[in-house]
Length: 322
Ligand SMILES: Cc1cc2nc3c(=O)[nH]c(=O)nc-3n(C[C@H](O)[C@H](O)[C@H](O)COP(=O)(O)O)c2cc1C
Image (cartoon, rainbow, N blue to C red):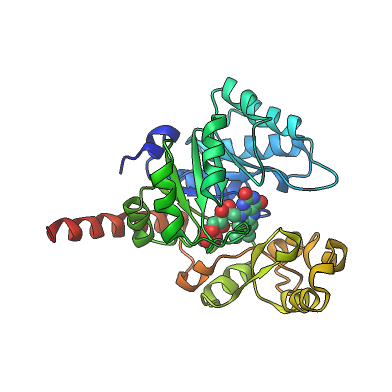
């Protein structure tokens, strides 16, 4: 299937694996790219820019297909060394960067000069238009359903995607709630040129996370995510567990007085415990409502082949209806 996104990124299928903290390692990105999609390494999971350079090199040893790197701009006190991260990406020969979290304008000239395509992930049409106006090549439009940070507007993809299509001139992919060939065809119908998936890619054989995480996603229904940190205007959709229920209780008790320090135990430094050691109650971890559509743990190749076959089949059936 050829779309503006497959052409722009030089990939076979219009399917992207979004950056994921403690999931987007070399193994994950290489498996997705080898299967014809675009795999993405998560820069901030690496402790230093030097580690990121090594991870990119490792990934390039595992695939000769295009790979991307996610750079998330966080509202943190100790900001990561973004210039060194960008240098590691450019020197590593990466061809696509997924930016997220904040306006990427400061790093854009360096990436563009290096010929790198930039896809900015946003949760609102106004942010997508801003990304377009500063020169991003594409956007990833993340609906309210998504795992991770859906923003504060709560607009689901059935509204957000056609709104984006009506306003944008640059290509965009759908993101949030995407799982299969039905998601892909629906995304295309709403004007997207492909789709981005997070949660679905965690439940694959190659995802470098503990089996407990994959099992939790397969066991979960669409009712098993919660929104946390809303009062901090840093809303995150996470899988529910004992720590999340405790966190929600604190949010209820403290209301608008809640401070990040109050919930530090439930949210800070929990990813290695969960993703690497499978301690499923260690804290809040991002997970999408799409968990309700995930019932198996295929390889990335099986998953992507299945999505494309189902999408082609749906398109054929629709053509036959005319
Ligand atoms: C465990 C997990 C970690 C994530 N970490 C990041 C991250 O560090 N940076 C980022 O931009 N997006 C992150 N995301 C969001 C994904 O890239 C993607 O936009 C989202 O998962 C799409 O929604 P879906 O899970 O319904 O497919 C994360 C998502 C998950 C599930």
